[in-house]
Image (cartoon, rainbow, N blue to C red; front, side, top):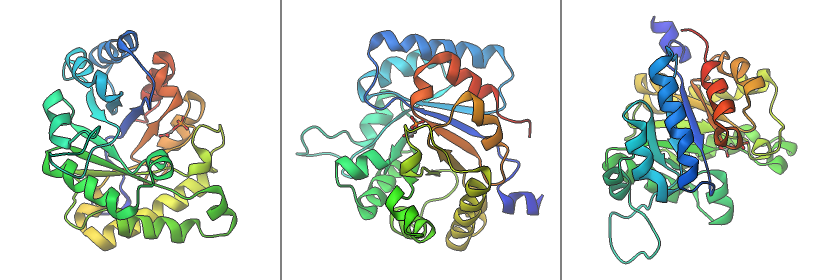
Length: 258
Ligand code: PGA
């Protein structure tokens, strides 16, 4: 048991969908379909759907507690003159129970640094949300043989020391795999997740052994089962395929029995 915990095995996986800047009211039929499936099937995974902010309240109502709803970002500030930003407490008030922070698209298009991502993770935690903290190397960094160093530095810089497995999960998302149809090999994913597990246990001790490590980047029905079966993979973060109910349900259904 102890050894299983050390390996991050025996955890119920988290299947998270990130809709990005997609979806209007019509798209909520998917939330209804997934929530219905969760009540009828015997799901082997927890499910989180992160629609745009505008849909969170409606999605929460339709989810009926069967799936969790989250935001795709949150402000590091709790309130004030920050036009256009949304605080973690506002997300919570709208019904969210989680927030993605540090997604590579936020880092790239909004210049988010590790320390800002860490501040957002803390804000999410203070509001009672699960922070899903993302990191991963770019193609250039990988080609230069720096992937592991980059990931180590991102973990050190963007996961606050006072996080634990109840208020944080992490997502390894190699930037070159996002939306491209390319994925690392199973060995590469297992190797990077083992490195991440080592960083988490070194930093957080026992709770680091229990922190979920998600893989993200071109997860599809065809590869989800294999990825979810790898050691130290405790879930997946799904972009494109989470927009299509049949594909997302197939990914949820591919979670292996514990
Ligand atoms: P993708 O996106 O599944 O479309 O590659 C993953 C993500 O950005 O989280």
